[in-house]
Length: 192
Image 1 (cartoon, rainbow, N blue to C red):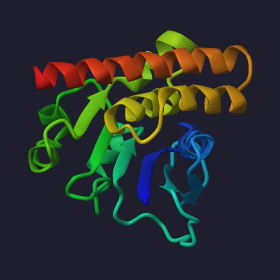
Image 2 (cartoon, rainbow, N blue to C red; image 1 turned 180 degrees about the vertical axis):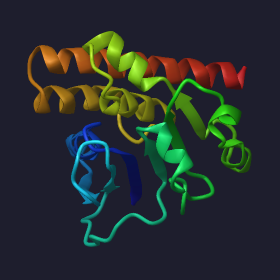
Image 3 (cartoon, rainbow, N blue to C red; image 1 turned 90 degrees about the horizontal axis):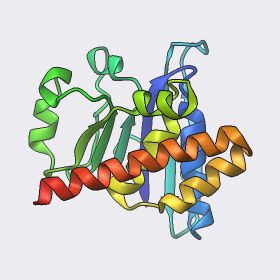
Image 4 (cartoon, rainbow, N blue to C red; image 1 turned 90 degrees about the vertical axis):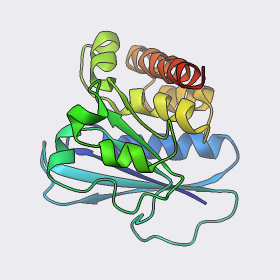
């Protein structure tokens, strides 16, 4: 079973992100489960959402405490909470930022994880370029597809189009595709 935890703030599409991962994974023949955890339910408040993907029926419904993948949609959370708590030693982390690990204050996480497992992607900037809004969820899902190989980019595109048919979906798919290609380029550069 692969477990994912997504951190962000209300209004950033955190819950939608976990739903889209579940939809993409389900389309590929896996069992999937997505559910949120809310504190105060208002725009800007910290929100956590969870997703599990498995080849077998998923019976557990507890929060994800030891994720294989962490997605941080809002880098301001890095200063106020330990978003990397429980991350498995061979896990992955994706942060919505174009800043370096040093600038973000996460060098210790980057150094203790396998090379290339913790990366930043300027998801809000990519989202703004394609959609006119800074909602990073679809962008980060495209990046996660490239980083982890958990699901295919085509499945992300199909899930986004199912959830947001028409122009909104097309813009978000284009943003996710750009992030997918960016992360693949980053991986090639790191391995060169």
